[in-house]
Structure formats: C-alpha cells, structure tokens
Image (cartoon, rainbow, N blue to C red; front, side, top):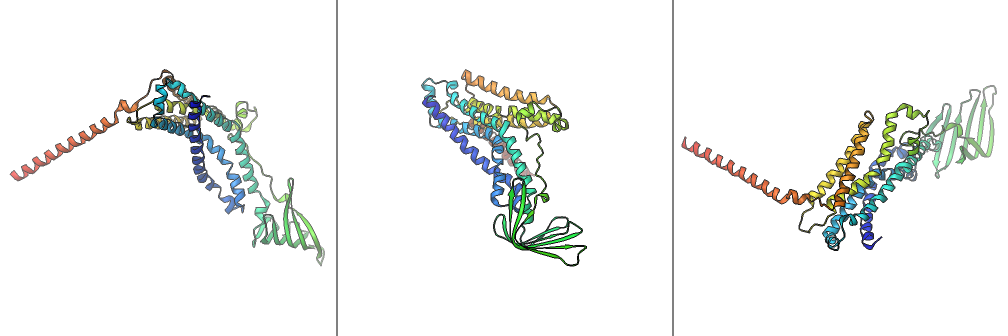
Length: 401
C-alpha cells in the first residue's frame, strides 16, 4: 500500500472508530434502561447488570457501523478537499478511481466486520444475553437473599435473612419448612452461604439447630449442628432459552431443519431474516461509493459543498430507509426483497460508474445555491414592493373619499 493510500485509509478508519464508539455508547445507554429491573426487581449487582447489557454493544454496532463509515468517509473527503490535498492529488495525475482505492479498502473492512457480526456474533450474543437474563430470573440467591423480609420461595417454604455480609454470605438464617404435611421443620443458623456445585446449589449453614416436629409425636426433636447443607436445586427452575430467528446463525437460516418449529410457525419471516443477513454487509460498500461519487472530486475552497453533503445524507438515508421498509413489506410480499437488492445494486453501479469515468457530481455548481438564494430574496423584495404600492393606492383612495 502506497503512502497516500495509508494516509487516506488511516484518516477514514480513525474517524470510523471514533464515530462508531461514540454513537454506540450513546445508543447503548438508552437501551440499557430497559434492563434496570435486573437491579431493582431481581436484586442483582451493578456488575451483573453491566455484564448482561454489555452484550448489546456488538449488536448495536451492526446497525451503526454503516452509518459510521459514511460519516467517516464524508469527513475525510471534506478534510482532504479543505486542505487542498485532493487538488494536489489530481494535479499529480492520480485519477479519482485510483484515489478511491483506500476508501474501498476501508469500506471492505467494515463490510467484513458487519458480515461477521450478522452471521455469527450477533446470534451468539443474543443467545448469551437470553441465557443470562433467564439465569437472573430463576436465581435462587436473588429470590432468597432479601435481608429483613420473610420470603416464600415455595409453597410451605419460608426463608428469612437477617443481614447480608457478602455476595453469597449472610448472617441470621431462618427456614420454616411445612411442605411435608407429616413433618414441620424449622432451621435456625447463625451463618449461611450459598455454594454452587455444577448445576446444583446448596445453602451451607453453620452454628445452628434443626427442630423437627412430626404429627404423630408429642415432643419435637432438636438437633444442634456445626454445619448443615440445605439443597436449593429443586427450588430453581432450569434456565431455558427459546431459540428464535434472531438467535439463529446464518447457516441455520440458509439450511434449516425440516422439522424446525420456528420455520413452520413463520416461513415468511424466516426468509426475510435470511436475506437481511445477506445484504447487511452491502450497505457499507454502497454508502462509501455514494459518498465518494459525490464528494470525492477536487473543488476549490471557494466552492460550497453544502448541497453535495446534503445529497449524500439524503441518498444514504433513502437507501437505508428503503431497506427497512422493504424488509417490513417483504414479510407479506416476498417479491419486495428484489427491490431492496435492486436499490443496493443501483447505488453501487451508478456510483461505481461515476467514479470509474471520473465524472464529478458537482451539485453545488449545477444548483448554484447563491444564485437561487439571491433570486428568492429578489422575488420576496418584488412581492413586498408591490404590496406596499397597493397599500399606498388604498390610502390615497380613502383620503379622496
């Protein structure tokens, strides 16, 4: 890679990373507010909350990355033109299609990144997040460890914790178990700790006693213990995750099992999800081509680029919104998917043709914004002048009467 290619690529990719990180963090903060109940209702720590919501970050990048690359390319081209570097490149004999090479490499890198997230990483993270949330919902510790409260974990089983001393350690344990109609068990211990052993969970209590009162016996039996283990495994339902379309890898969508219940329930949604994964990596390429076709040609610093920048925004927004709309409509009308592919292909083809032929799309010069503005001002002035003349005639007529 030549020095000029490295310079342009570095400028674009540095801007891309900066924009991607900032936009992702802003949107991530708005999204994590939906999971606040993990702390408020389920009694989880802030670390658990951040670990679960942090799984959203790469998923958000799937949508933000194409937007970030078009902003980065537009910024880099505007900077290069403002510093007269595009003019120097053109004067040195470097054609637009040659200058487009580092831009294409940056867009290809982002396209590979988006393809990886779309095909594998996003479904895997969706599964992990659903599993983590299911574990939290069925966590025995969060249901039992509520200091100062009598908690009914199961019918006939009541827990009370006096004080929490750590994440899984607490002081003052009281258990009242009446699940067996022939036996009433009461356990009191000074210390307790929840220990996980594989798929099993146990409440290890120390320095306490067990009182067993059987219905056929008059006096209870009291046993003092130094250490006693209470099985909590049966109290927690198994954390299960339903694999939906968003949680399926792209090869599972492309080659589904015949008896897949999700496929049987919504075959049209299945098809739309598959095609959405396929054309997702094409957006960074299309956006980069559009931005370069409009902004990648040298202009003097006196020439305005406002209309060209607006044209980039409008073209990119139209293409992406058209993709969203086409995906939604394709659930009921599969033929609309061909329209989405057609819009992307048209953007790539037209922009690539403009870049290859070296034909600048100078919208600012064609529209001549200053002339349009001056014309609009003159028209307003003429209307105001005529209005003033009419008012003057009306005043004269009133005086004559």
